[in-house]
Length: 446
Image 1 (cartoon, one colour):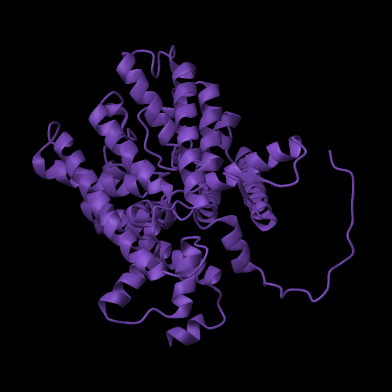
Image 2 (tube, rainbow, N blue to C red):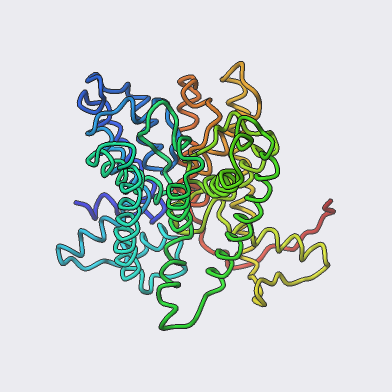
C-alpha cells in the first residue's frame, strides 16, 4: 500500500508531503481541550500556525507558549520541534533500523535530499550518528540549564525547563515557556545561560555533515571544502556581528546601555548568534536601533549551515555569492575558495537560492504591508525575513497578525524550512536533459 501511494513521487515531493502531514497532525492535537491550560483548545488557525512554527523550527508564536499550553500541549510542540529539526525521515530510518528493516535506495535518496548531502554513500551511518549526537548534545544542554534554573524554581520544574529549552534551542526553534513573551530576557547578563544557549545554537546550526566530519577528523585528518567554508564563514559572521551590535547598542538605554561591560559583551554575543535561526532573545527586538535591526535581518536571511536545523539561504550560499562577486570585480574567470575552483553549477544554484529567497521575502513584506495596517515598515520586513529564515524573532507583530497575515506567515515558514529549490522540484515537472544545445545569446548587463 505504501509503495502504491509513494510510486511516482520524487524525494522532494515526499519531503513536502511528509512535513505537511506532521504539521496537520500536530495542529489537530493542539486543538484538543487537553492541549491548553484553560481546557478549551486552540482555534484551528492558531493551532496550524503553532504546529507549522514548531515543525519548521521557527519559533514565531501568536499565543505565548508558557501561558497558553498545558504540559500535554508543550510536549506536542516539543515533539514537533524534534521531528522538524532532524527531519521525519531520520526518525523513520531509526524505526526501520530497530525493526531490522533494510533501508531501500529510495529511502536513502530521501535522506540525501533531507540533509542536502552530495551522495547516498554512508548516509544511513550518518543518520545514526546524528541521532546519537543529538541525544548527547541535548542531554548535556538540558542538564546544564536545569542546574542553573534550579536556583530560580523548584527542581522538578527546573529539569522540565532544562529539557524543553535544550531541545528547542538545539533545533534552532526558539520556543520558550517562560511566559509573557519574555523569552530569555531575564538572563541577558547571565554567562552560564547565555554561553550554554549560544553553544547549542551554533552546534545545531553548523550542519550534521560538518559535525560528523569533525568527529571523524581524528582518523581521516581531512576537512572537506564544505566544512572549511561553513566554519570560517560562521566565525566571520559571529565575530563581525558581535562587534557591530556592541557598537550599535552600547549607548541604547533600552538594551545594552544599563548593563555593565560583561553584560554588554554577553548581550552582543548572544544577539549575533540567535539570528542564525534560533529565535530566542535576551534583548527586546522592538527596542533595538535601526542599524541593529537591519543587521539582524541580514543575519536571519543568511541562516546557518546546509543540512542543519537552521534555515535561511545558508552560509555556504552566502560565501559562494561573495567570492563570485569579488572574482567578477577583479576580472577573474575562475571562482576560487581555499584554492579550489567552484563549479558553475554550484554558483548558479547559489544565485538561484539567494534570488528566490529574496523574492519570497520581498513578496511577503509587500503583502503584509497591505493586509496589516498601522505598523512600521521595518516590522513587516523583519517578520517576513524571520519567517523565511525560520528564525522566530519578532518585533511584536506576530500576535497581532490578521487571519490572512497568519496564513501568509504559515506558508512562508513552510517555504523557508524546506527551501525554495525543494519546493520548486516538488511542484514542477523535471525535464529530461536535452539532446542538443540552443544557440548562445548575449546582452548588455549593468
